Picture (cartoon, rainbow, N blue to C red):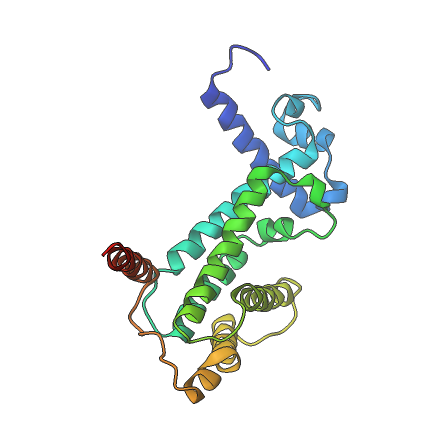
Length: 233
């Protein structure tokens, strides 16, 4: 890499390279994606991209990483929404769906079935886990407050699979009901099937509709500190 390049110039070129790369992926898919065509569209030699990325897999992994990070940020924000359990689940699910609708090419790349796990990288796996953690955190709090009944990780996987399935149908051009209506129905069924009915029959309490994730964490911290004081006494 030329020494005259500043870090800002390197970052700018990498960003431009990623932008052209996702356009090429949208047209040709991963199999048709190649460095020669990428260089041509960038107006540089076929070897120039190798100065910034080791190969096309690293380029695509870099794009996936940034996309998962943006999705995780959206989900983290949605976790703070006030409302009933149904509304909380719908808020997170809608944030997920809106991302996929606004960035369909990136979403396809994130879950491209032709890629192997070895083409991922630690940073990409970290951002993927942020998405998984956001969904699991939502369900874990609902289970902790006895709104849902079951294993948080398993319920979160059901939630993720349902959302992804709806998006896959939409991206494939299959007719479905409106996305928000579908998400609301999914949230209602999830609460009814995993806890609201059984929990109420056992006389369990429902989560206060106005409580947020940050308030839950503060309450848990206070309860933990109180328990330590009692134990010390």
